Every structure is written in C-alpha cells, then in structure tokens.
Length: 270
Image (cartoon, rainbow, N blue to C red):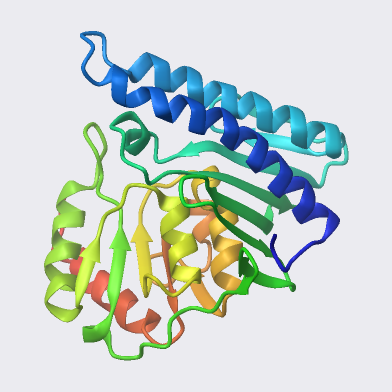
C-alpha cells in the first residue's frame, strides 16, 4: 500500500485496482487477437469502455457530488460545482493494442479547475503512483523525488511524437534536432501519464509534449509538483493544464530545456 492513505487516495486506488482487473484479463487476450484477420482494435475499444465504466461506477459511488471529465464518456457536471474526476481508463491504448506491456490507468481530481490529486496505476508492474496536493507523492510505499541531475548532458528526457493526422510534425522535428545533441537520450514510450509519473520518480529527468488532454495530465501534474519538480508549458508559460502543452522536469534543468524548445520553435514552420 501507499504511504499516502487519505480517504480520497483510498477511493482512487481502490477504483484503479478494480478497473485494472478487467484490463489485465483483456490484455491477456490481445496476443491471440494479433494474428486474426480482424485484429484486436475493436476488442481494445471495448476494454477501454469497460474500464471507464468501472471507474465511473466506483468513483461515483464514493463521491456522488463530484463530476467527471472522461476520455470516452465526455463531461458529467458536478453537483457541488467544485470537484471533477478526470479519468483516462487506459493511457497507452496503442501499446495495449500491440501487446506492449506499458500502459496505465490515470485518475486525477481537479478542484475549481486545478489538479489536486492523482493516481496512476501500472497493473503489469503493479506500480501505484499516488499524489495529493500538500501531501507528497509516492510509488507504493516509497516517497518520490525528481532526479538530482543538474547537467543537461547527463539527462534522459521523454516526449510524445505527433501521430498520423495531427499537426506538429515539423515543430517536433525541430525540437528533437535541438534537444538530442545536448542530452544523454530521448525516449518515446507512448503513455503520457506514465511519462509524468516517471519524471516524479526520477526515472526521466524531464518530459515535454503538446496538445495533450486533461485526462492525460491531471494526475501527472500533481505527481511531479509533489515530487519537487516543475511543470509549465514547453516554453515556460504558466498554464500547462489549461493548454495541454506540458514541460515537466527537475527545477535545475527546466530553464535549459525550455530555452532550447523556444529556440527550436523559431526554426519550425508548419
């Protein structure tokens, strides 16, 4: 269990674990479906919806006055006018679809539009990342801190690549050209919530991506901030949650990465 055991976190972790049982069972079937002519896409879509239904039922039962911002199910207004669950029932859907064991359930809570608590659960590794504003962040029973690396050339950063049909490819190429010569490596793992959790845990030194949705980042923003990290937009602006454009990193390297990304933007014209 997590060292952070507030009633709120208990509600969130219990919901995540119940939804995870559904997803683990379905993930075991994906490998068999890879070789079928139809493929697993429809099956995974149903798994995603089942997970969201479980989360909505569990969270709604525990906090009936809270609203929802759901990846699949849209927005459900809160009765108290203050709190909203922000839920991604399967972060890393493409990984799940291809049988890659790197995906998670992400549950964030916003209060008056601000992220205040988060749970990111990786069922395959049984890693439960939790955070609550003012209470710290934990991985299972271990308190989380961002990494202590101060030299950009020693860091490993994570990012997301714009996929087919989205804008931003030229900007991303310019950013990668600017960042790569200055760091030890860049990774693209395909699950933004886990990328943010890994920054909080010191596994990545930083993460940046554009055009994310609230359910991708609500829990992770709290996680990084409660691990003594800094979250802004990629150029240093102060509204990452509102815009969906995120740079999360250690305090030491943050200005260096933001400066590099700002310089790259000048070279990128869509």
